[in-house]
Image (tube, rainbow, N blue to C red; front, top):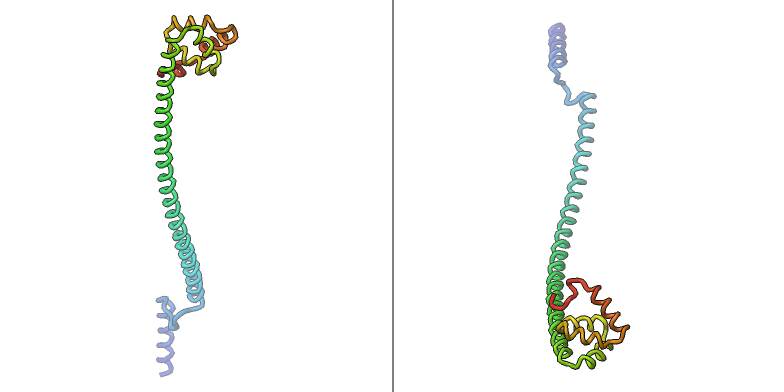
Length: 170
């Protein structure tokens, strides 16, 4: 009977040894792997939590940036509207100024050339040039003849410095 018991025990150990299963739940090497696996799983879980937190922070930041971008776009649109309004007002002012200069040119054109020369010599150069541009060339020539040499030279230089866009009506 001892012989049979010894054979059964030997066969059981052989079966267990060759089949890779243990009579106990874990061997030393399996425990090491299990602890190592738990450590790796813990590290992965910690990394996932860190990445989740970071993703949450990035999502919040992205939302903040989108909000700021919307505000900036809104302010840019408002600034563009103001710029358009300002340009419209400046254009209107320029048109009104050109109209006043044209009307004043007609008045100077009807004046005695000597009297017009005296008045034009006292005006700011650009205004004087704009007035002379609005007057018929013959009358403007008569006025220029009656200006003193210094004023006539100053106005002549201003005429030559005019660009196409500086002339009234342009």
